[in-house]
Image (cartoon, rainbow, N blue to C red; front, top):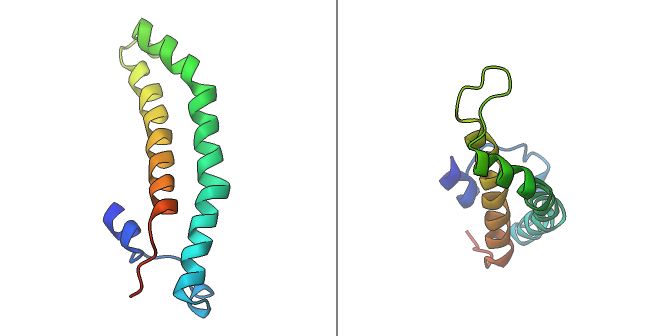
Length: 99
């Protein structure tokens, strides 16, 4: 699925997008990454860092059962935001390929 997304071959609601040129679609994708994905992922990374760090230091368990591993849930959410940021930056920096 990730490869299909990077190649732009995944299923999407593109009935309207086919009316735009490939260059315009690439520009809209970059603009969407810059306006939506980058700020939101930065917010999650900055706002969530203290909570994730505390949870990781304590190896926090689940609140009601105290089963171990809750810190992994918080860490994985933070890592997901980091990966979204990196992918958005790669998408913004990538030169458009004409097919």
